[in-house]
Length: 303
View 1 (cartoon, rainbow, N blue to C red):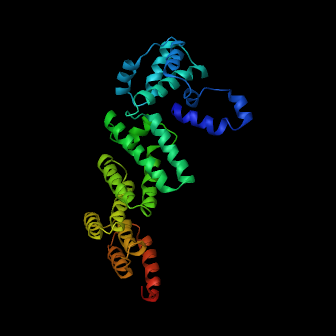
View 2: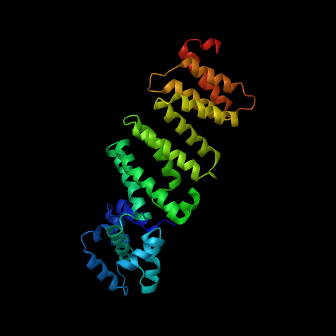
View 3: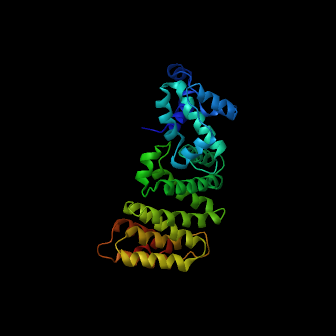
């Protein structure tokens, strides 16, 4: 089941613009409606449901909860209110959390930052999106620490957001690369993000780990830290010489870089070294890359 903030977003995006769907679903309160209400009015709204809270009480609850939904659910049970009107209980809690304790991340705020980033990606590009997404990544780390969560799967089971952490973290890694081509600090941020993800999510499937390794090494290479990229690939491939896309990723550094280190001879050398491994995985992909490089170098007939 989706979180309440994700369901609210679906209502805003799909139901509200469609008169027929809006008539079928009925009008429902939204967090946007709470923005014009004062703190006192929000507390009065809660009292109308038989719920009496104050700032100290909410601070204690926020110290333990990961979302306003986790706090609001028991309050709904306490009040006996259900249905659309009782959405105000969650809305009031979420709004007061954001106003009173903005330094404490929560799932609702994280979901908003993720989705704001996607909107910025469409309207303004990768740099603008990554600025807010790096804030979101910091929130993810703090929420992981707060709950003692050690896997993406466990996080998503509790988050249930508009976008899963599993998908979003891959989008973040990709867009940090795109942003880094314009502003180099995003390449450094990409390295830090991928290294932190590898440290925290050691139980992730092999493909995720391999993709993050490639992201780290290619970012070092693009930052002109060639020796570091070389050392990383050599270490990883000494440990797993059958990692086909490791050989491809290493070779691609010398073929597609925007630095002055394009070196098709070195690229071909790396691909041939990988292709020579008897049980190398993705051998056909290495062969395709090697054929392309040989053609670019003008000796495709001798490849």
